[in-house]
Amino acid sequence: MEGEVQSWGRNQNGQLGLGTTEDSLVPQKIQAFQGISIKMVAAGAEHTAAVSEDGALYGWGWGRYGNLGLGDRNDRLVPQKVSTLSGEKMNMVACGWRHTISVSDAGELYTFGWSKYGQLGHGNFEDHLVPHKVEALADSFIKQISGGWRHTMALTSGGKLYGWGWNKFGQVGVGDNTDHCSPVQKVVQVSCGWRHTLAITEEQNVFSWGRGTNGQLGHGESVDRNLPKIIEALSFDGSSGQQIESSKLDPLSGKAWVSPTERYAIVPDESGQTIHSERGDGGDVSVPETDVKRMRM
Image 1 (tube, one colour):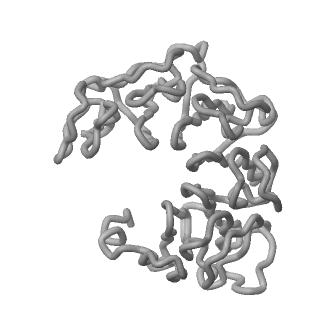
Image 2 (cartoon, one colour):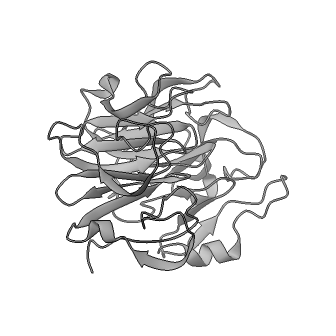
């Protein structure tokens, strides 16, 4: 049924939303959403968030850092509606490890949860137990968001990419390794891994930066990078594309998304086949074959 949500897997903090803390080996329908059509779901490490078709935001699972947006630090075993948005309708949601990011229909960015490394983007390192608007981006219309382990990325409708939070490996992509909030450059798609970031530009060039010890940046080496570098094998411009900027790509066609995990990254080529980054010297296989089979084409 369209808009129905099912969950399965590890459930030690109730992140499956089934009313228990028992793991589930098969998909089970989340009964709390009976009669509610859900359009988007996001999963953190041990918490989950969702947005309904009518713009309501829900959180459940582990809530120690306020990452459920419910005004306290308690866990929830079933989805609960976030009631502190003053009628603002949400359009999308993403989860980091212990923080949550959402965007309203008006393109306004909200964050809440853990902020030890500034990953909420409010100019401080304080946790927030309810959604707070990111005032630094109040004049921007946010069209995409992604949460990493301890960092966050947001893409505006004008193609500006902003990153903030933990930056030990350069995953924010601003040329240093200091934790902070700062703009990057022009792209059409962005996605965060635990410690690295990938982006696609308007000219179908793929860039990566951050942690690279297992080859997950796709540059044929095992080094960290604190500035975006083009992945030549996956990019239209190959080695000639040196900056994140340019012009004409329908983001709904071609390489329209990237999906990095902790130690590897995977993107589709023009035929829809998956291509993974080269193996690094860290000893891990770049993309387990079973993971490729599970990717959504």
